[in-house]
Amino acid sequence: MGLIYALGAYLSWGLVVPVHFRLLDAVPAPSILAHRIVWSSLLVAGLLVALRRRIRNPFPLVRRHGLLVLSAGLIGVNWLLYLQAVQSGHMLDASLGYFINPLMSVGLGAVVLGERLRPVQAAAVALAAGAVLLAVVMAGSLPWVSLALAGSFSLYGLARKIVAVDAMVGFAAETLLLLPVALIYLAAFAPPVIQGDPVRFGLILLTGATTALPLIWFAAAAERLTLATLGLMQYLAPSCLLVLSTLVYGERLEPHRAVLFGLIWLALAIYAVDATRAARQARAA
Image 1 (spheres, rainbow, N blue to C red):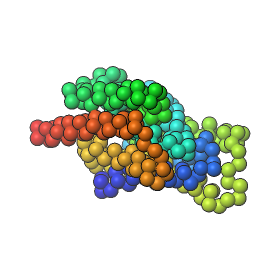
Image 2: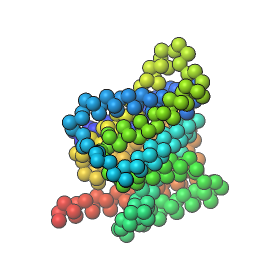
Image 3: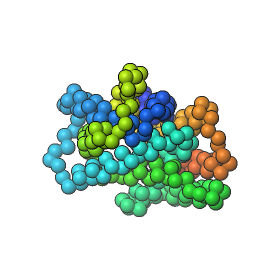
Image 4: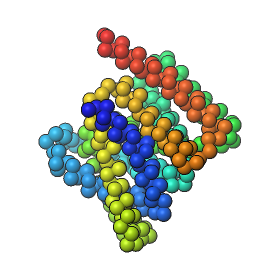
């Protein structure tokens, strides 16, 4: 079941979610984000009630749980950046961001948490950094969208690692923290987006499911699979996004981005081989 949950999560993020948001092109990204927060909050609250006996209780609250305020802000920024990238026809930038993200997370772990990098891991991170610099030289500009997506999600992962709270409880806390901002925006600032269109209303309503369910499936997969397996499977989502952007939505893979993708894939391959070997050695020991 772990593989099924992981496939459900990553294929949703790589195929279902971007197509869903492209169908809502006529709706401004901030409005989609606000609706996404509202409907996700309702869905996850219902799930917490239904599954309350199977979820680890976060109480008593401790000081580090205050970092959920930071993680809520980071995931909100990440969702908005992703929405704007998808709606503006920059899926390639979003895909690249989520390819860079794992290597950025490794670097953050080393710098912030003092986690020791194996030599091969350090080489992979250095190769990824070199790839970004080379792409900047070739294109004359930084891939800001990709780096912002990778940075916000890496920092989000770091905050959630420090908080160490149940995945669903943490997600519920984050959406509830964002809920007042979303409601104020919808009530006072958002333009009317439904306008008697039942199809659009249905698509907006589904944003709760396409936000919450993949995260819940991911948490279920994490409980059942090794970190090495989960780490290798995480590249399914940006790979699907890359294929979708070029073959379905006609985005052009420019030379500097092709070089960048190629070097990032090489860095990820080096990292994946090293992670698999380390996992085997740990099992053998």
